[in-house]
Length: 211
Length: 161
Image (tube, rainbow over all chains, first blue to last red):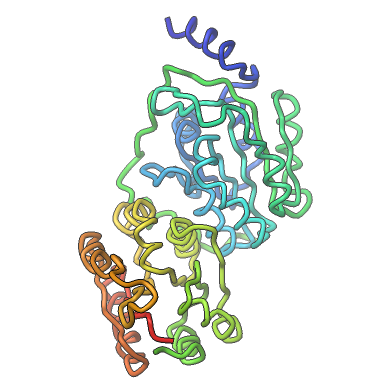
């Protein structure tokens, strides 16, 4: 039922075919260095955890205050300018904190990349459509807000190439990825007590980067 | 009320590295002095951002201060809940208490009804600051919250220009 509904839903919503969430995340797993921070939220968090063991500098933002992964990422990027920070966000979350793109643009951290997985739905709550469908042009908003680089990618091979080059020039960088929703995917579960994970992340962040 | 230069000096003395803020008519007048003191001011679009950016700064080893009006406190409850109570990050905040000293502009301002109960409901250790003679009490409160690794708030009375 779910596969048929998936197909019907995507067709009815006029959504791009795009890539799977795992295909969207894989290039980040490949490109991230040992000292880099990766922040995931909502469906990206679920799939990120499914793809393999967590790194000490993975911040699975679950539980979250929905939409604030970009803001947490900005804070870490400003405090730790020597580390690259990847934020893997959803389109529903991005809409809920659009102003954070303006804040990031104003602060202009060179080491921050915001990657938004656009599937047109609030996947973790049952795939209800996001407001406006595909009306919001995230790439245009990011560019107008001061992001140094912004791109919209719909194909896995494009993204594989782009992800490897993401930090070759100064950021902040913004990438919108067309992703297929998975209507059966369960919501992410916290991988452990949040307060303890926060302390572990802080300890890892305060550990000097090997030269 | 509090003087911007004195507040900036206090923040520097207390080791705050960043002030994450949405201004109001009182707090906003301190920004230039705070920047002149060498504390980085991060202006955000909405108050919820302030808690989570400050959370990220803290995780990365910085010492941020959240500086918002009580109306922004009302708006930003979920970010506060998540940052202070789920992740248990011991952030400190200055929260402007609109109309506390003067209700001429906003007679019957409901900020006076809701601010203190909401701070208490959010289980925050807060201290009311009514005038500039209390700078030392702010410092004492900040240090006590740090020693206990708990969040804290100085509630800054506003309304007299």
